[in-house]
Image (cartoon, rainbow, N blue to C red; front, side, top):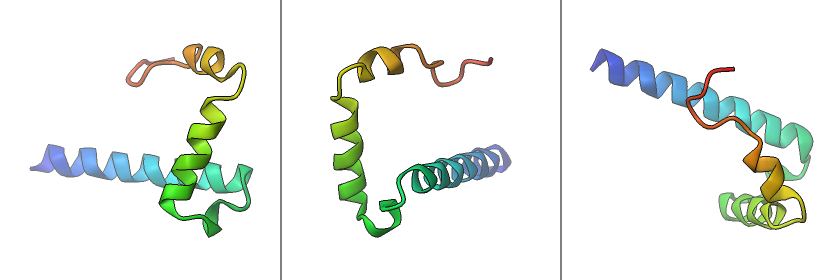
Length: 64
């Protein structure tokens, strides 16, 4: 139970940080619904070069 609470705390912090980054880069993000943000990010993922860019990102769980 303690481990689960710690994992939840870490996940919550990560989601808040990434949401803040998204809102900082895309000022309209706070006005969009969750579905609109998802649609926007999917559209970005289809832009030329996006696949190569994401392929070069560290995988989840990898340490720098």
